Amino acid sequence: MTLRLTREDEHILAELAEADGISRQEATVRAIREAAARRGHDRRVGEASARARARYADVLDRLGR
Image 1: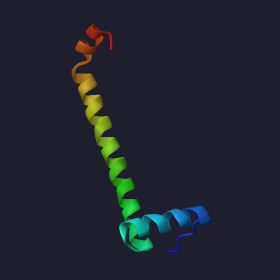
Image 2: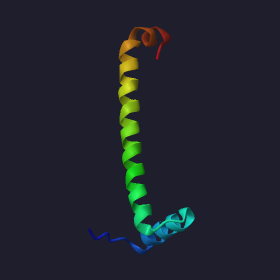
Image 3: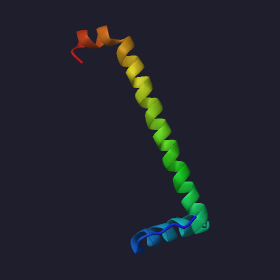
Image 4: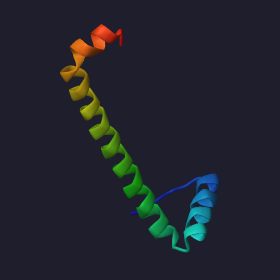
């Protein structure tokens, strides 16, 4: 796989790698995994929030949301 980056993105990647003492390849892999984890977390929080709002809808209505 070839990853084409702008000069600015290349600089940011190099800084991330240097700060963590890892290769640019490892910094790229970590960034991908962290983004995927955040997306999954956001989805789970949204689902839990929807369940809680549905479960407590009557209470929320009485409180005026």
